[in-house]
Image (tube, rainbow, N blue to C red):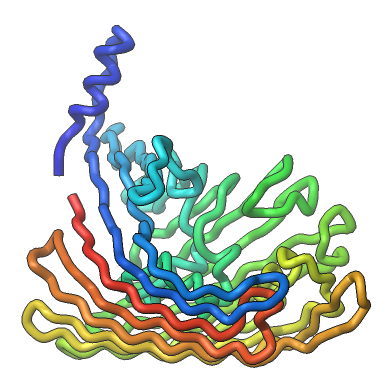
Length: 359
């Protein structure tokens, strides 16, 4: 890790006198060669193609300043970096926040942040490929829309009490947002989560609710999604199980984005089982996901309603670690979606071979 040369350079350029905190510059370069075969429909044409894919590469700074009396200022400013499409800019919606932390009471932060929901369910996010498929893109994760990172957010994190910790998030978006709809004049969305970690045992649960109103597209309904997750890691083996259920889910959002009206938004449930085995510098991973959407969508032109079909996901992966900072991977990601191709959730097969270096 490199200390705050970047912050010092900026300060010198601005000809100001600043006190530099304990700041770390960090990043991760992640690029792969992917082959994707996607079942098509009039709304989402099929494709069979090779591509050089960016897999959530990022660059950022994070740090803290000791304010005395057990109080610290904490901050993070991270950008997604597109390494494959020739973009000269940075991508948004990665963590950017500032706040205060105390030794005895935890921390409060404001900005764009990982959600408490993901900080519990994300223990199942074990694969490298994010461009070809992966944990969120294949929708093996019902919280892919509002259970990853959210802007306009306030987060409280508790201290660790003998392995137990808790988080609360409030999202208050006074204007339009691409991530959270402006559904009320107060708190639009809220989340609460808790987890317990003790040696090889991991257990957690999370809940999120959307305070909806007639100003939004979800028929004025209040929506919710919850999850329970458990994992066990005895030595080189890891096994885990994730369960999700609720109507504040990614399936409904995808149907809306595909130009379909939602005839009903009902509870959808999903089960996700994963495991891994580490030997030497090698890691083998596997996961299976089953989702049963409860609801239907309709074509606003023809008026014909269609029930959602079940979705199954299969993920297999191999990783070799050259060092703690450099790895290569080969992963397979498959999905069967029956008649869901109209909303972009039809059959999909992808192979990803990539390299990652962290600094």
